[in-house]
Length: 568
Ligand SMILES: Cc1ncc(C[n+]2csc(CCOP(=O)(O)OP(=O)(O)O)c2C)c(N)n1
Ligand SMILES: [Mg+2]
Image (cartoon, rainbow, N blue to C red; front, top):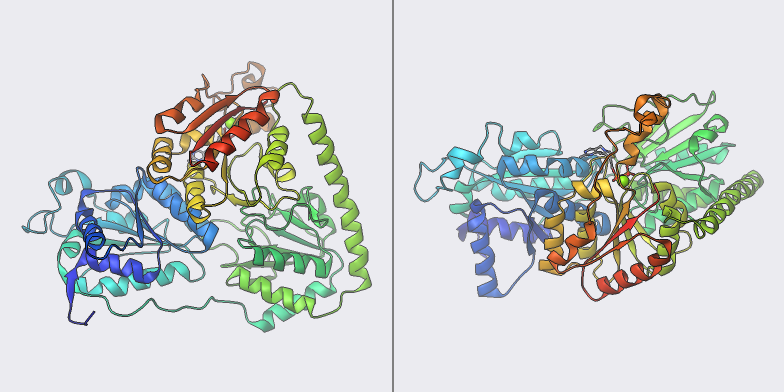
């Protein structure tokens, strides 16, 4: 393409998306995208190219969640199109979670400069009347994105897309947003020339890591705690190498985002880290938003805390209550690999061997207790979460991916589901309920040949855009297995009643207000409306058969929805 060639802004945008390397465009539609849709159709008709692939999403949370899930599974940022300020507001909760979790994506939202005053650039009567608000997409996005900007002229379009992409992908990662006026989408602009800006990850200097490695080698009672250290198998292997080199147990705090450390490894610690803080002399916090609670828990005098994170001390959060001695900033995977190599370069000491043996023995006790729990769950009258996860452990095929949006059942999932199986784990939410199924669908796009399971609370299910998700699965053939952990209510919402009002009226009269979802809907009955498989399971004896049938359905290309009635 010559430098003087022109095309309209929408065609240029499509070309820029392709050149940046996105695989998908996840769009929540608005009529102002007509020039982009025309550009997609023209591309198909004239060159038969369909990359990037366009997905029409029936909800903003779905579009954003697809990009989040796809990134978590692949490390590849995607394009999300949200309908102007109102679409940004509707998707903001999911964008907030992506921001919180350092997930890059490029969000583009159309806008108008002329509100219909210029013939040929008129996006429609809904713009001056219903759609636009004073803030506009950029200001609406500012609190939940890393960088948000309006493209002001057609000349800026290519540079702004490349900048937004670079900012999203560079550490600390996160979503960025561009608002693009309809006026530019419809106007002729220069055809974009040149490729994506090449970037290399920001990493800590080797000298800093050498200092930390030396410290870890010298300490007597190290602990490692993480939530999201290991998105990839390489990251996990580096963490294993670090833990084994220094004989440190690895704790995953509360709601881990990945299988950061093999959960059957003898250094994997099941018990709460809080009980061990008093004995520690060095704590390596790797990718953990909250490594223990409360964060002010006194540490022994002289205990050193090292925080490895893309952006240590959490500039995106209002709080970091831990006195921190070392901040190791930059790409976590690269820093982990460097630290592992430094530690492995030296022979380990006799003290390390003794400490390792002590932790192995300590953790073996918890593994034995977990095995006894599984045994007991097999003879219970109701379906315990333990039985559900033990059954999934047995029945799911190799390489299954578990995307979770659960609360009360997290410990049971961690203890009983993964163990010695090669399952992946991707957390499907980050505090804000509603993104679990969209995330699972994004993961399935990345792992089409693997079984992807979304385990989701009954309360969480109600926050997800369920018709939009089931519709997308049906329309684009994205079969995931959705398992509702149905304890018939928002059980976690009762915890503070037990803590602060154990003999109060709410518990005495079984009148807890915030826990209630009544009557429990027949969730499985929603499935057939979308050509999906659905079943409700109430008794332990039915569990294995239902899970097998559901796995069969997803393997044949049908979304499956199991409503598992759990003992609460
Ligand atoms: C968008 C959003 N709204 C409300 C909440 C508050 N909240 C946290 S957990 C929860 C209940 C979840 O219920 P369920 O998924 O059934 O899990 P359970 O408590 O039963 O384990 C609610 C309402 C939230 N985290 N996010
Ligand atoms: Mg529940």
